[in-house]
Length: 216
Image (cartoon, rainbow, N blue to C red; front, side, top):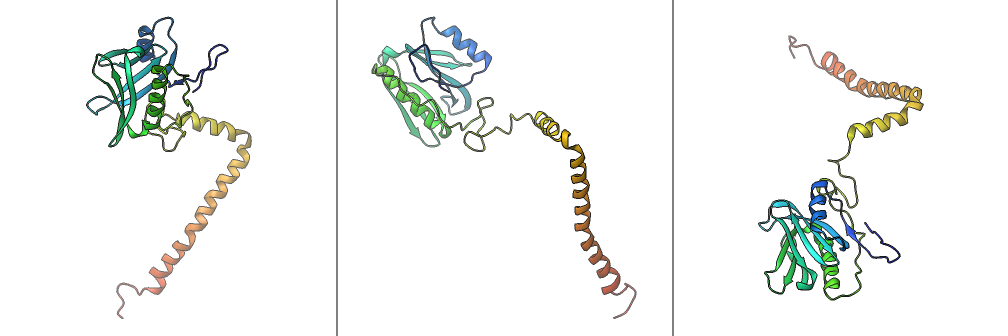
């Protein structure tokens, strides 16, 4: 999604976040910080599926992990950022002046997103104009993080089926008499389609085939 603040338009890449994680992020932010990027990665450092959040402000990079807490990296300490491709995915690599490289692995479905994250971080590091593309194709559900059947599609796991059925019924109620006629016609058509096989079965069993006790 894209957000603007005041009269100065500035693109933001902000993904939906659950209440608990949002609270953790809020407690980690300072009052004067401007959140520019908030995205999740789906792998931990061991390559196991999990959810880790990368939050980028105009001053810092935060990696929020419910298990390991928050990793805080000032933008001023960053020397290079890249989205490194790997087999089956990739990882965001943030080189720091006096600390080990910060690694954020992710699966291949998130490669385009983290390429934009790396580009935005490089712009911040070099103090260039922050200009990223926030309108990325949705490949995963923002609620459950499952892969979508198609780009920007609907997550079948999160669809409220009974709610959808109720909406369909509400649309049909003004035309209930026609729907009843259609239902009766559908049943009659099905029965008519079943009649020829039943007739052929009777002909084969009772007419064409000799009785079991007869001799050829």
